[in-house]
Image (cartoon, rainbow, N blue to C red; front, side):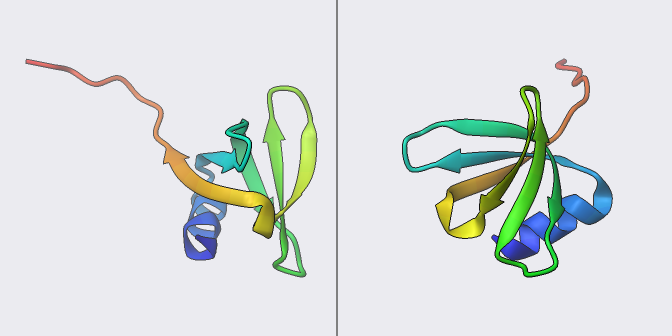
Length: 68
């Protein structure tokens, strides 16, 4: 998961972080220097989240798709 978060940070992608209680944050991330927390800027605030609190993460791809 850390590799995916590092790629998302480097490329400026948004991510969806899911926690044990099924709550989610969607936003841009920034890894901390200690590599044990991630900062996410989401709709309501900016928060530091311990990596062990994250159950899964997904990259959010924005764009329009044409269906034929």
